[in-house]
Amino acid sequence: MHLARVGGANDHGIDLRGSWDAALEPAASAKAASTIPTSLPVIVQCKHESRKFGPANVREFEGVMMREPPGTVGVLATNNGFSDAAKTRVFSSQFPLLCL
Image (cartoon, rainbow, N blue to C red; front, top):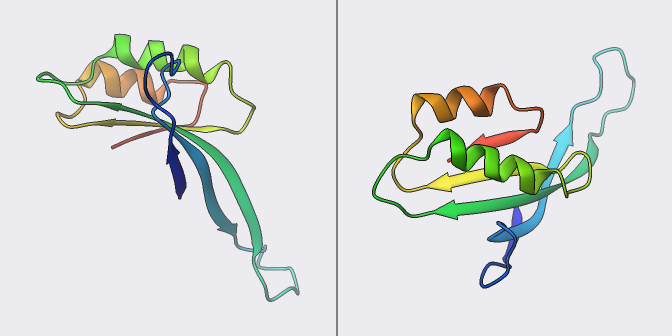
């Protein structure tokens, strides 16, 4: 991942923004020997709190994701883990979300 800090006052819930350079392996039946490069847009929200990340935080970040282009990957990073309810919300989200 290549990320740049964009957080601060009026950051609209985004602390880092960048891209994730992934490679898609060609189908087994394809004759091409090389991989197909892909770059996905990424936004990251970081939280340093005394309690676990909750479902309200996830819902708020989903609102942020609505303003992003389709295919953007959202990353939620926290120092204290995620509540079970937050995990459930992430797994049921319509957006591609990663939890760190």
